[in-house]
Image 1 (spheres, rainbow, N blue to C red):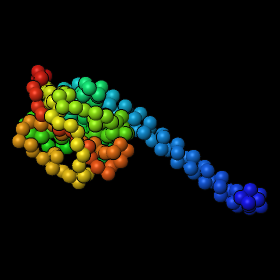
Image 2: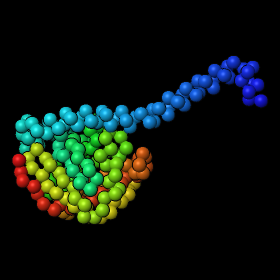
Image 3: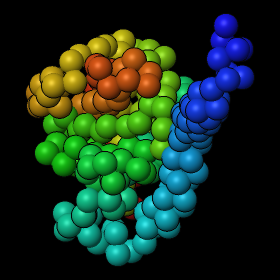
Image 4: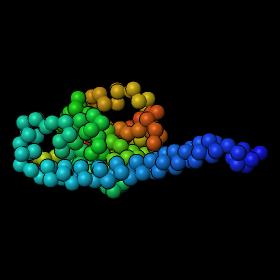
Length: 203
């Protein structure tokens, strides 16, 4: 019956052809979007690498004049092979770098709960596998004027996306990483909590 309809209804054939094209384009978009954002993030990271090494950024950091989108710290997670520059701010444009620092929290390696948000499936997905972190794994932050090491203190856990208490002061020098959960969804937030272990030599 369907074949007969297609033979006698030209408009139906055109409609089905149009629908097929739309579905194909939609599928290509779903596959291509993460790839495109990863390429874009790679270019941003090249620029941020250069900025991290600049005397101008070092001076701005000392004077606490880092602007949204500027390089702030490099985060390394040896257990996951993560090595990426984190920018100041968590605006959509800032997070195209892959990871950004919550500006209402202390600067990296300072006292308090330093908090960083990162993408899990797009823009380089630096936090793509943070669910695999275990207590004892280390996280290193390197700023323009020094650095420090934190150690994961508990298994990653999940909270509601509106739960902001995770970035509030903890009463100790700590680091909090946040990312979307489950993978590819913003329904929840995955949280990694780490405590300060040691400072690294200053620049």
